[in-house]
Amino acid sequence: MSKTLRLILGDQLNSQHSWFEEQDSSTTYLMLEMRQETDYVPHHIQKVIAFFLSMRNFAKDLETKGHQVIYISLDAKDNSQNLEEMINSFVEKDNFDQFEYQLPDEYRLDEQLKTIGKNLGIPCRGVDSEHFLTEREYVKDSFQGKKTFVMESFYRQMRKDFNILMDGKEPLQGKWNFDHENRFALKDKRLLRKAKKHPKDISEILEIVQKAEVKTIGKIDENAFDWPCSREESIEVLDHFCEHLLVHFGDYQDALTTWDPFLFHSRLSFALNTKMLGPLEVVQKVEAYWKEHQDEIDISQAEGFIRQILGWREYMRGIYWAKMPDFANMNFFNHQRKLPEWFWTGDTKMKCLSHSIGQSLELAYAHHIQRLMVIGNFALLAGIHPDEVDQWYLGVYIDAIEWVEITNTRGMSQFADGGIVGTKPYVSSANYIHKMGNYCSHCAYSHTKKVGEGACPFNSLYWHFYDRNREKLENNPRIGMAYRTLDKLKNKEELMNQAEEYLKNLDAL
Image (cartoon, rainbow, N blue to C red):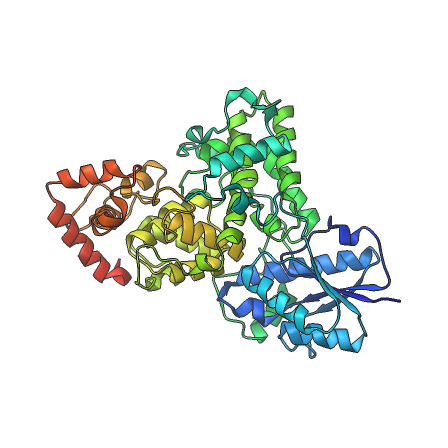
């Protein structure tokens, strides 16, 4: 009888995959905890623990349902930590005559598994992960011959294709996008609700990782680790979002506040990116809940959330496969500086960055505006090399897998792609950060001061960024106003000098 070995990667925990519809004694599933995956960048300790715990839960679930599973822990004596060696050893030892894997979502693993398959000596087949709503090449094919990829047109087509928030061929309530209604600062902390928690014992896995001396970043409280690490827990977090957070999600998804790290965000990104939940089931659940509670929840709340998954997430994945591997080397502004040391500690006098980076190190989490308009904004204004930014973001966040991290970081956040993902750089002075929340309160720097002692670095660095990149940006139709304002500034020379001093002393900010 033919025997098949099937590999499951750590971000392929999709219990709904057609592989698992039937139990087959001739099929064995292989799951590996490997240094290859813990070591390619220093990851947050909570990220490493969450992946391994989720993988172990998934393996147990498969075994409970009657599937045969080989699970190799990080500290197993027969774990060579080499993917090709491990696959080869099991094929030879157990006489498998076919090898299958789900197509990886990272370019490096895709290339590696292609090579392994060619050298294996038995038939090898890659199958779809059955998670995303579009094929790998969908975005590339959709924008064939165009210089820029426009997410809004992609998003509208996805709404039509999957009949989400639609009234026939038109969007419900006559609008495709409620983004302008999703930009409020949070003024009333009484609106906040506690996140859904799933405390669990992680001592065994933590001890294994620490004994192996895996290099990690960030902090972990083994008595308060509560990320969802199973499909059941993930569904509970989704239900909690619909019942308690959706009502205010759209309004305050961009808000910046020290009051709460999660606000009304769902905390579903790790569950989605490991495939414990599927994007369509999440989108359809949120749409259905909104339809049942329209008297309490405005459509702008639901649309703002659905856009992130049905539009942005699928779109970014498509950009990744359309532009890799070249995308990983793009550096449009030729930025060369290193990250300041305080990116690893949060120890900076700038409160917005101290809070956002400190939270990232403590929780392996920051919401999209903290990532884009605080941390990413500073890195772009300061001229940090995109490689440095990529590696930090990829390591520090629990939901960061390269296909989604690099397109958001090197693309949208750092504009290193020169405009493939976004039509303009996402930069701002202190005014935006002040407008969106309370970060500027009790800061060592004044958000209103442009130059002089105590002037917020964002203000002078903002104008310095535009000045030094004039040749590359001046003709961008979305930026003309910035250059007209720059040319009228009476204190331009002072601003440039102030920015130069800050750039020389980034570690001291």
